[in-house]
Image (tube, rainbow, N blue to C red):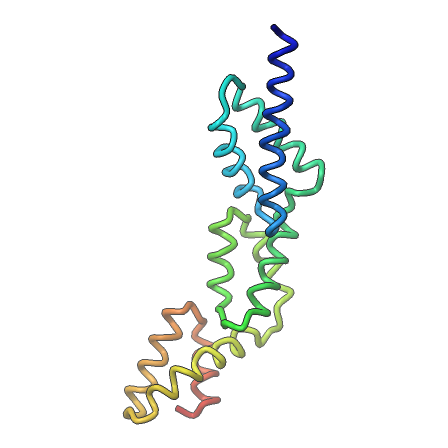
Length: 168
């Protein structure tokens, strides 16, 4: 009976590990995301010690180098900063925080961004909005643009620099 239980556990471990590797084939995941997925996959299994299996599989993933929040954060910052849709630094911080990345790792990965990244991103973001408001009073136009950019999470400095650049 014990041999059959070990065989069942080995099959279950292999199946769950395969699901996680399949998930990782799409994109890198944070440690918290992987733990949540492990819990989800393991909860569907029967006749296994869920806590022991989760701990074992997570350690196995760490040992294989799949759990690296620093690399995950750097990759996500790079993808977002190179995206055609402009995003603010606050947006990136929120996204990383939602994924369970620590604030020290978030701050380290944001250091790789160009110092004018947020300004350039705000400038791209506002060009479309400004063209929609071209027949509007200048004061009202400025107010709408500020509100729009604040809502997107841009800093005050980036907003005012963008407004002066566009001479709105």
